[in-house]
Length: 276
Image 1: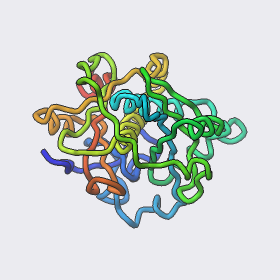
Image 2: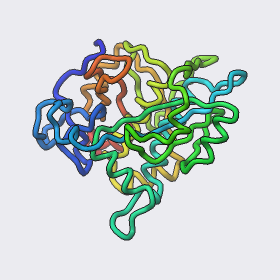
Image 3: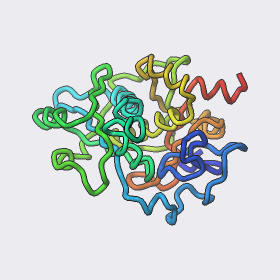
Image 4: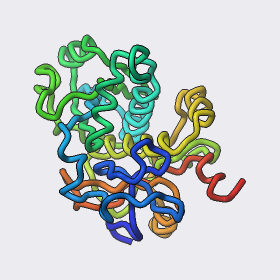
């Protein structure tokens, strides 16, 4: 199939905003998914769009002489989003709320946007001095920051470039570990590495929302083990119709609105679909 998504798509049914649009990330509708106020998760009149918009900043460390491999960067970005979502500073309410919890809630109350920028040398060192978390892969380094208003980026981060995140894999990635989650990318879409890093983060976030607390704890204890791979064209349509979380992009950059970009294939979710 092409970039479009089959069937009706709505937001993650286990998320506390079940039924509402998530603004660029959503899961395949199932019979027990509550109907939302709109048939489209991208309805321009959604109350989500009336809220102040926030974005999750991610900065990838790219030195000209020694850039990370593309898949390593994608996997590290996905893990960085999960680390932010599960960090104690992002959790809690009222007097027990962590220092980032309000920003995370405000972000989740609007469209779930992520923007990836690059830094090298002194820029990277300055970015590391800002409140956030650096997550490392095999060689990749990605720093994730608490959400900021779309129109209120810290000056240091706002100066970093979005372009220039073109990365390559020196060799084809090995087959993914079947016992760990896999974020399957649409084989028919061409996106920059920065865009794909954001999409991988969307996919990881959707899987996180669908898991129980016990399943989340188990995943966290593995260090958020996961793989990012491009799906076989023959398997892509089946993946999008499987009932697993599907990222449907809002189309702000690079690709058409409503494009299916990623299917989050988590073993716990697949077992649930089988009735295990």
